[in-house]
Image 1 (cartoon, rainbow, N blue to C red):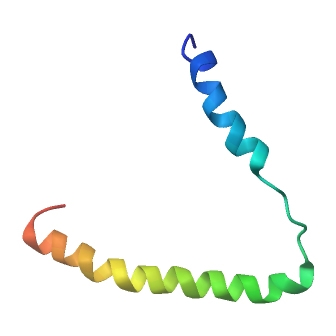
Image 2 (spheres, rainbow, N blue to C red):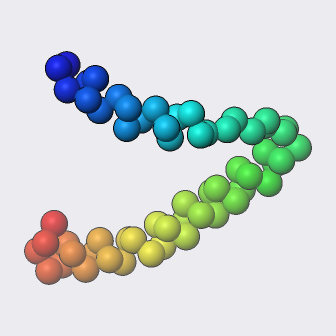
Length: 59
């Protein structure tokens, strides 16, 4: 807890520069399928790499 005053200024600038954008319900209809697509795309890239790690004994 004694380090928190030292680290707090580092987080003040990023928190103060963030802007909150409004959430539009009509955009959610495209965002959810796109998020799912990105998830499966990332899984498609990482699953073979993970299988290689396991087969070579790295995991």
